[in-house]
Length: 241
Ligand code: SAM
Image (cartoon, rainbow, N blue to C red):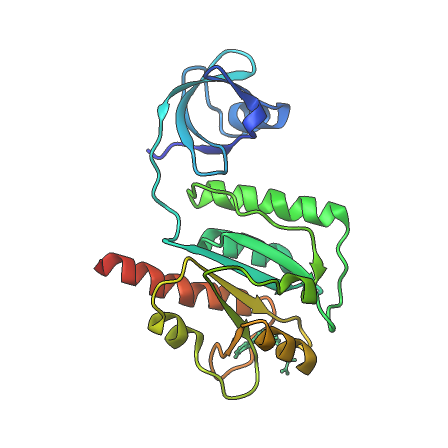
């Protein structure tokens, strides 16, 4: 039987003892009906995991390190112009697919400026999706910033911008043809698409425009497709090595 995964904050772990929050206790004891002595996997969201045993009261004891190998071979980040609706699903699916970091941006045609509560909610969804998909890390979701500010040059990072119309190389072909960079980032536009000025600005910063295929995808479908294409290439290359 697979063991339940639970993400913990670094401050919860002291001297091999983990103090569980009220909501974590409720989830483990009342929802999952786990008992004292039952085993769980604890994740610190930064790549470390442990096998632990539930104790009486509000603690769990670390038993041994737990080795996971579920991350992509390199960092793949998404720059996401915030769509009006549906960003919860984007966060959930992209976390399951292995995204390293999500950078929400406000673009010329963005319709949404999110509240701090929304950001908290997306971070909670990413944590739950990382637990569910047995990831080692919880992808950070950064504070939303204007698109222009997200375009800073990142060394040894291959940068793509998905553009819905025009004749551009396919993302899959472009990633497969690359000698392996240290990291990949892909920018996806909002419902109304990128403005011409934004595409030009991205190209000037070193982003390569790419297509995701002949059909126009919704703003909430495009990041999931882009990430699926990239993970497919990277993991099939890795399997051949
Ligand atoms: N209203 C825009 C238009 O008519 O050109 C379409 C925007 S699309 C709904 C939202 C975003 O998803 C785009 O800005 C782009 O980043 C991405 N996208 C959707 N379909 C795409 C495709 N076939 N190729 C590349 N990017 C795509």
